[in-house]
Length: 256
Image (cartoon, rainbow, N blue to C red; front, side, top):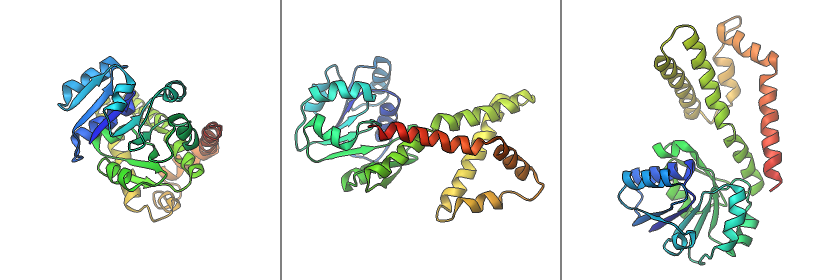
């Protein structure tokens, strides 16, 4: 199998890195030279990577094509490219829906939208896909956990949640910065904060069949530190702002 990547940004780089570290069987990965620093770094790191200057050549030499460009770039270039009906197209583009992808590529089938995030480079994290596809599901299960979504409207909710990644890291940064201000070594501060949230998320994942409300109640006692912390954040309207932010992200996605 030959894999072609149109676009070589952070997400493409993370997916390619994950593939090269996984048990996925592939003959070659063909990538764009658009971002020279990333493409050259990937080629130096992994043997079976080839760089092409022209997007059409990437497509012509690939069985599976990954669209990893921004929505603005995607709308400009996809229409100009020629695809074959026996190819698989996987789009990481957030605001180009399936209908438009079919229109732009002139393909009636073998098109899947996916939402990979940077931890895929470590073969970790969820990868929502729409529409369900057995081959694509098995592919991404080698790089994390595939979540099949039957409805494109519902898939946009997952895109919205993925838009909180930077906010999550901003939270970790603020907690670490606070410890540093209190004279803690930065590396130790970041290690503690990251390890704490990793462990908390792991516990929640292991018990994902339970309502998250239970974790909120079980992790606090009346008058305790966690009780004080969560209630102060509630009073500031923090969680309502979070919900509002997600609503705004969804509005943007629904325009596509």
